[in-house]
Length: 160
Image (cartoon, rainbow, N blue to C red):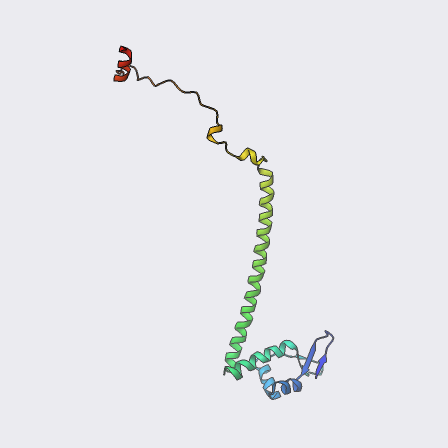
């Protein structure tokens, strides 16, 4: 039978938990002594198990009953799970920080780009085609440097 505390959450006495999971109350006390469960206590020192405690108990029972893990192994597995959950929380916090920095950086770059670039219309950016370019004045034929003989074609033109 669950009882309610001032927080509004349901708490279960040791007898109700033992009956629900078909285990002896001494087994629950052993799990507490080994540090695997940490139920809260009333002023009269009665153990009260929360929903989180029951979830932890279900994990312990699955490891011991279904997988044959001893209590030392259960302790190691639970500690590793706690560490993994803590690391996952830290990674998630870091990812949120990085996302915020990237968002702030993109906004900052957009601000810089909007003030640093010269505004022009797309028509100003289009390259003119070669046929639309004005004709370049042709340059006179190249003269050989002084002191050299003109080529044979030039001599033939002079004779005619």
